[in-house]
Amino acid sequence: MKSWSAQEGLDTFFHYLRFPTVSARPEHAADMRSCAMWLLELMQSWGASVSLEETGGPPIILAEFPAQVNTASTLLIYGHYDVQPAEPLDLWQSPPFSPELRDGKIVARGATDNKGQTFSLLLGLREMLAARALPVKVIVMLEGEEEVGSPHLAAWVEKNKEALRCDAVLICDTSMIETGWPAITTGLRGIACFDFEINGPRCDLHSGMFGGPTPNPALALARILTRLHNDAGEITIPHFYDGLIEVSPAELKSWQDLPWNETWFEQATGIKPSAGERNYSVLEKVWSRPTAEINGISSGYQGSGSKTIIPACASAKVSFRLVPGQDPQRIAQLVQTWFKQELTCEHVTGRCIYDHGGDPFFTAPDHPSMNLVSRALTQAFGRAPAWTREGLSIPVAALLQKQLQVPVILAGLGLPDCQAHAPNETFPLTQFEGGARFIKAMLQEMGGV
View 1 (cartoon, helix red, strand yellow):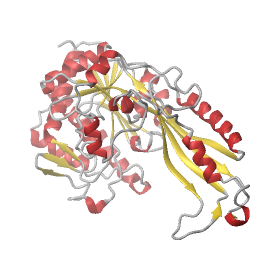
View 2: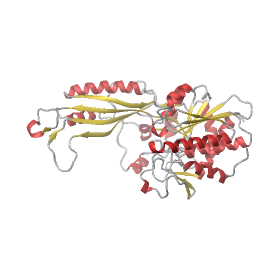
View 3: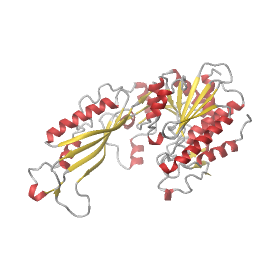
View 4: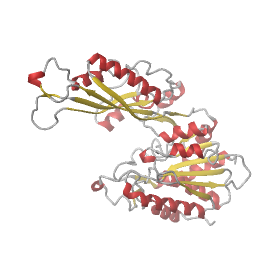
């Protein structure tokens, strides 16, 4: 296999970006399969043993690259080829699936999330293959449903554990601190989502004729929601914090050097970050503390003018971000028990519906695999990585760690201003090139080269 020029690598990546692989839209099912077939043929041409794995949704691409020297180590690289919808289209400066190079940045939907981050790793892998210098076995798994919650992945992984046997998993789907300053994400919050529903009278009632003695579902819901937290910002559900793993002093100390302080958050959001538990910094609240957030409330008349009623029902959508040590199923039981007691206090009926959940994720910074990737990132970018967490959830990280029982490493190449999920998504060429350097350094570290 001959080496590629930088232009050939970029041209191939642009071809990849042209597939409108929007997994949330059924009308793109054919595009999803076309992209999967293209990936299969591409990696076959690189000498991999590749299969198209049917799951019930968009297929998974599973490629195996044998080591070119004797080694016992195996790295699994996970990525996804599906992307977010491109809307609102009128805010794009160029068509979202017609990639452009503009001011040193690749502009397209999927440029950073996740086609760009993963493809830069594949380019570095290809360079090692062309030089016959691959020191470890590499498995590449690319799925097509990450942006819709990977509904078929868990069952497929359970059936294919033997094919996925490895020493570590690398996921490149997070962010660096800034250009030239890499990061390793050691933890992610999990999630548990609920619908709260409260029922009152059989139908909407005239508030003049029936107001006073009649329980108002909207008011009852408002009172229940205000009791989710106490005055110190703590969640009041009994036993909610049981088992929570506290952050180590070493991690807390490392966070003090990062640029994301209260001023940064106020500038980013337009409001002072004054909520949450007292005595915790902004980064602790976002990265290592659980939350209870009201995502939406609905009840009664919402049109213009007045309609003086007691509404028959009220509802709210509530989500809990969870941290290492918390289990979504257990939290669901606690929330439902608490809500039932709150209904009794308000003398109304209702129900708490558990919609879905995802496990929190954590890999200890002192794990040997984390030290290995730290050295590789330092080689690739000339600066030691920061140790970070993120407040969002990437369910696949916890899923692979739980099912494969190996360390999962989150080392992303995105930048805070890449506008992932937003119009005019970008991926700088510096990151594209840096990803290739990083994976080569990591594979060499794993192979003891």
